[in-house]
Image (cartoon, rainbow, N blue to C red; front, side, top):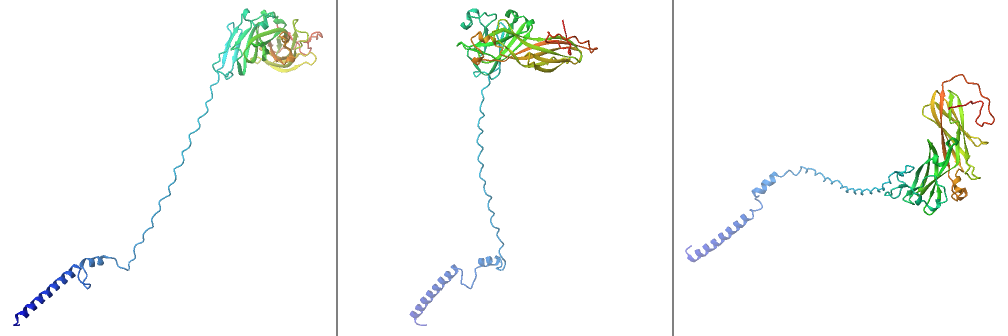
Length: 365
């Protein structure tokens, strides 16, 4: 083209068209090319993916957590054991003169600090209630005065029968223990027993309070015959026991035997047999047998009723509701000889209540 203007116009339009193509090419490159051309990286990912026909592996369901057990409630603390107070200790107290002893069992005193005392009263200390009596023995005071016990306590009094003016050949004296309260009230100890040690009478009884203790006696005596005997082996005898009132007893004083028991010593020479009370004579009877040769002791214990003749002396009687059973034990000795031909039976003496022609007796000297 010779026209220079026309060439210039075409050159400008060609340059503009090239510029537009260059911009379009850059835009396609930035967007990843056209839809007919796949990018490299996505193609690789597609190649590594599993085939569409293979199923996905099963997924295990979640395992539920075990239930949480609640913590158990702790046991309540145990109740404290009740603390029992210590029982009061047992006590045994003897007066300074050795004539009276009091035995207090464990737990008998409510106040554990209580200390028991026993003392002989002097002539100037005797209660006014005793002023009218001819006292032949000692009066004792137990303290603390007025103390009471939850269980019976035992009071034992030793009485010199010589001082009492009693002849033991006539039998064991019936002695009873009475108590005199500070307010002047008399009472009689319960469950009284009497035994002998030589010429000393051992008198025991029970009480539940402490007061002045007075021993009354001599109104009756209990005798046993035979009480010293020798007998052949395999032979028996019967000892009889009776009660006699003394001259000082009241006219209506009629003690009687209500029970009889017997026992023998440890050697085995004797055995104790039947006991009974004779309805006519009111005497107690106890049978014994020599089982083998040897020496042994035997005893008979009788229970007495209406034996408290001293009640009238202190202004009381059975009607006042004061009564007590007294048990008296009498002891004997026996010598059993080896068996020999039996001697001829003696003739019974009808005046002798002990004579028994079927049971000859020989008393020891």
